Length: 300
Image (cartoon, rainbow, N blue to C red):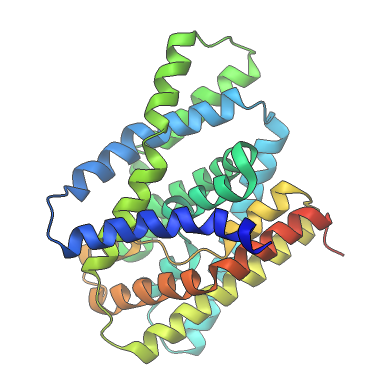
């Protein structure tokens, strides 16, 4: 079992570490350009490839999307309550407690732990979280929601195209399949490198507060993951993937929004860094639990 866990976690650690030390060694790295390429081109290709080529079925895709939506609602409700009781500003921290890092860390871990099926399931879950992060998360930090931003998400159109292909049983030309497969191969190593590079630039200004918020985020993830699995009756690999993605740390993009709208960016940076390190420290245990959930069937 230890060897199995290392097989899952070691590649993630190694590539994140490479990104981190690349930044520390002050090597040239255009994180903004790479992130834009991944978000606007490679990730939509990953979505299209996984949804259309791995025969998940519309029911399974819908089930994972529903799980993600339920997780967001639960995390938002619990997070808002905790922030209110802690007398902390919702605009600054709610998006962080709602949106786990299902992209940079979640997708690679799902692939390593559960194979291509796990990655495809994770992609269906990730789509909902990602669109929410760039619309609802952005709106929380900004103080107002924008419908325009929703329709500006490339992922949305990748999903619509994928569902059209599945629903109409369209045969995708081989050259399109191969092109999207090649582009989608960029996503996971690039996301891990960008994560490591970004972590090297974040600093912890208040360690006690950062630990508190990181602990809250992890607790919310565990509670939400177990509730969603139970309520939706998930079992097998979908259950394991939902738990694994639910317990991921705070997404790095929350720092971008905090900085953009001056929502205590230094504190948010510290919370993100601490949340990521906490999950990394517990990653072997969290992956083991996810695998056990997948192997033991529906939660009783």
